[in-house]
Length: 286
Image 1 (cartoon, one colour):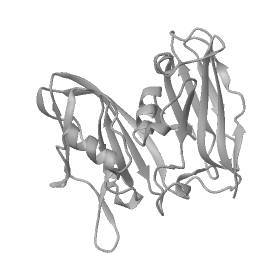
Image 2 (cartoon, rainbow, N blue to C red):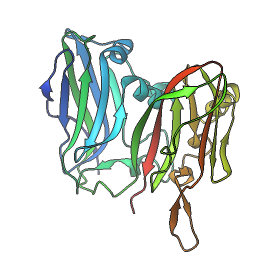
Image 3 (cartoon, rainbow, N blue to C red):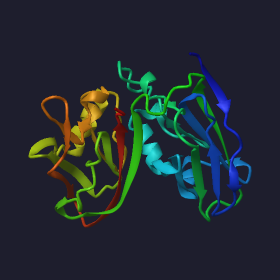
Image 4 (cartoon, helix red, strand yellow):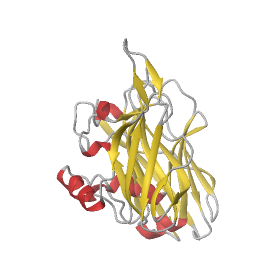
């Protein structure tokens, strides 16, 4: 089906300083991307202003948050795929189809269907740095009416205030990576304090203390770009096939699955502080 570029219906809500704009995604289409256009006082916000004046961009499906971006985290996630995907003054894009993949399981498969779920909305929250904010949005759509659960869907989760020490620190809690049926593509630690990280799943090392210099070189070889003051664990640095991402469950003989029992995520830091991590993870619907 051909792709069409359409303006989303104007947002509702109190679109003022400290206010919130809510966009309702039309049904009966498949969504490839959404581009937000931000202004303040009728002038396009610079990239820095978008990051300073917009608190969050949250996608909700049937009232449940499934993507939780800030302009900073969205720009990090996009720009990791190359400078051509970075934000520009006034404009910030959320991708469903992922043009950087270019694999059999890549771009086309990840468009978001809208069939079989309740309302799909974006909530855009401004803070008090925004004086007279304005936002509109445009979507690349396909008229194919396919189920929301037809193909893999990328979730985004935030983990605020994780401790970093001068040396090695184990991330607290065991919630990260343990949701049933999720595959993890990237885990971002946007802090200069983090110099490397290690992930071990059921005693098997999935990612082991790759230093920034080597990580940057690996990224560059496969067309990715390590962002400044950010350490990114990217399983797609070695393969962009969705089936090669880190699974949060262990496959058993006969095709069953069990939850990971022993997960360890360790950070290596150059000083004490904290970092707000965020993950890009895919739900493979069964």
